[in-house]
Length: 114
Image (cartoon, rainbow, N blue to C red; front, side):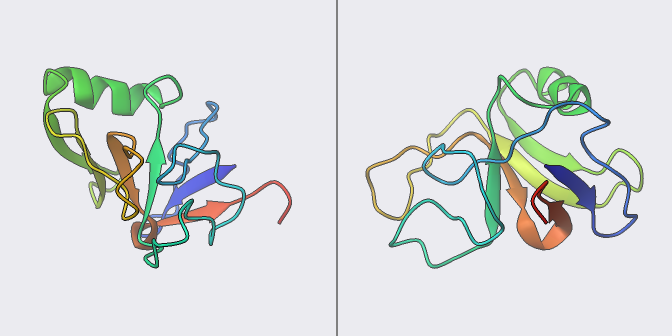
C-alpha cells in the first residue's frame, strides 16, 4: 500500500510499511473498504500505533500522546488527526476506531493490486 499527499504527491510512508485500517481496525483492502455496513462515509482511514511512519510517531510524541492534527511533512497540508484522549466509536456503536485518522480526500491511496 502506498499513501501519497494529494497536494504535493509525495509518499507519506517514507518507504516504511504503512497499512491503512478501516473503522473496525481491519486492514483496508481497497479505497471503498470502510469496515462497517452502517458507515456510509468513506471519509477516513486509520493507522495503528504499531504501524505508523516515524514522522507521525514524532508528532504524536511531541503532543504527549494526547490529540492533534497531522500535516504532510513535505508541504504542510493537513492530512488527518489523532486523538488518544477520547475514544471514538464507529457508526455502528460497537467498535472503537483507531486513534490516528487519515482523511481520504487529502491523500491518494494506491494498493499493490491496482
